[in-house]
Image (cartoon, rainbow, N blue to C red; front, side, top):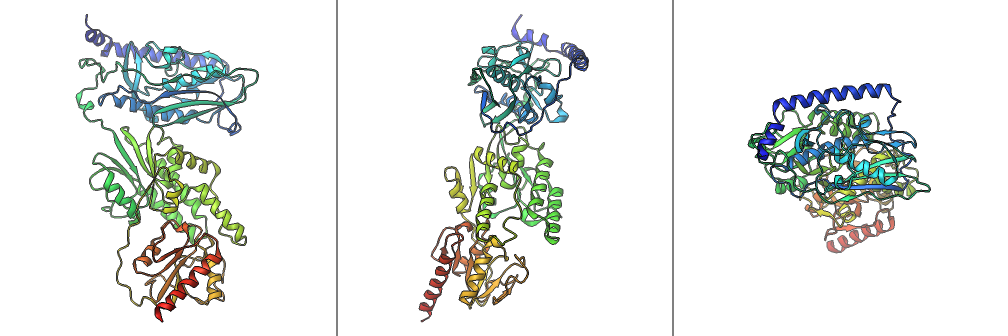
Length: 583
């Protein structure tokens, strides 16, 4: 009897039904056993072992080198299943002497919980099944447990040994809900740390071992070509997915976007392909939209999160009106936004381009694990941003706005980790590009399209911001008093009541460059210098700091952040030069 005939006999509707009945009986039997034996505890992340050394580690390849265009989708499904399960296990801290159970923490691997079709070894074949591929994670846990010298309570070998896998080294542990489990007992407190690169799954245990020699886990380089339902050629088999499925699975990039910057709009239009997927807050053809969050994605496949974006806008407006915490509102709703679309990313996505404000939450939910990704940077990293504000507060200790908000430490660490893992940092901001010099893609600022401006070149000096310390308000106020400047201020937010006392100041929201001869922005923080770009386009001299993100030009003078003497000298030099020109 030939191989195809044998496989067809193994995999038919009758055998499949019999298999499912047996599985159901085994599940019931194990459930009863679990109810009658000693309680197996559930563990959680207590952050007690974060700084402990790694006592054991195991690495394995995510992708199969011999996958074809037909069967790679099963590997993509496996990786998605690994992302979901890893979120359940990553960070768990297990007490010494307690039994760790794989299924206790992962739970039932159902499609309703996000698990997708992957590979499962069954009766000599690798068949497509929901949650297939979780054994790569149980393999790594078992391998790390052996390396740490833990006591193995329950472990089952695979029925088929795949060349290049941990099974070749007798370090594999297959799992099947819920009757085939992986259980082990540690001899020390330990923490599970799971990491993904675009190519590897890395499982490490952190803890403190005494009087024992730790053996490193196996590093498996790759698995050989698999005899799976997408590649065996037996199209008559009950399990074969059919040619229609095979021809529609293509690797794609998913763009996860938020605020529309013209620089990023141009970059995306020049790099995106027609098959790519978009997740956006609004599209231009929506009746109700927020224009600055609208993206022209034409007829591409997309998912919108308009409702959550509207809720965020309202929360921010109310926070500003009633003096609430605007950064906190942003973070809260950015988290809601990611949660709203986390199940929408196509399984075929192998690369992601994501807005920075959504980055830490996307990493937290595992959306970036096992994928390459680029970041559209719209601000400094939170850690550096907060350090800049802390440094400014050392100079202006009386300011109430420089230290009114700090992001949660865990959120900062999530962003830092994701920034480290990113392939590219994409930004038009020169200061941010310099920070990530080795992997930044520096875009050019889009030059503004301006309407004619009346009465340019008067005697006024424009401060294109509100009276906030992070924008350099204290420096500009001192400068205005000492040089007797006729100051125009754009915003009404202020550090204190009567902040501009003793300053010749006016406020405007329209025709802001009227009678302006100089623009000054000595900012500590500035991420979108749109007004500075407009001033330069109108040939108005500008004095700014590197924090504004624009490279020096003929009409732009850059002074160090927080250096008042350099600021004053630069402004006086410009005044003197203008007087010479007039003379």
